[in-house]
Image 1 (cartoon, rainbow, N blue to C red):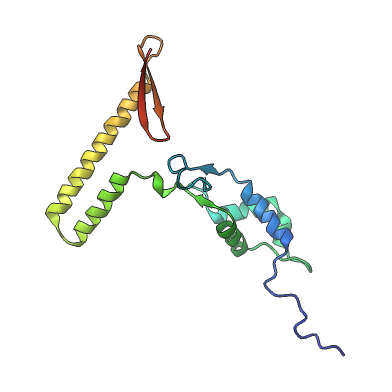
Image 2: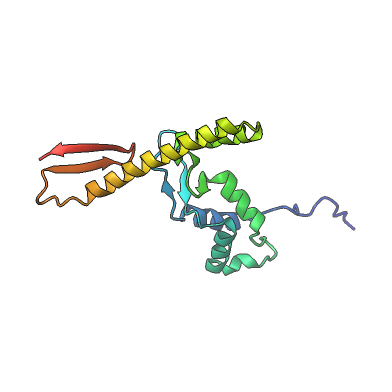
Length: 174
């Protein structure tokens, strides 16, 4: 009788067919590039912020029900396998990139948190006042931008364009 010890297939073996289906599914997801941070994240893609890995895995199983069952020569797709493939083989993130945040808002937020931890109430109030002023100024800018976009161009003497990549407004005389 032959000794069969050590001759079995590894227990954590994943069939390449299952992995390929998962890879094709992730590659076909409707991802977009970051608008503001292309210089730093030119290869990074972003999915809708309402998406979760769990919901993506459910979609994968709905589209490929054969992945639910394991048989002799392959394993079933697991959530762990899906997450590992998603995290380590693709440069895809869920939600908006953190670099799309306003640097001033972020700085003031952390300074206010530090002043709160140190119980420095005058500094905390001053920083909160700066943040409110910054928000007011940004609201004025966005209101002016909205108003400029609502100009009747037939009767107006300027055309307003906005470079949303860097948020620089331009005005061209007609």
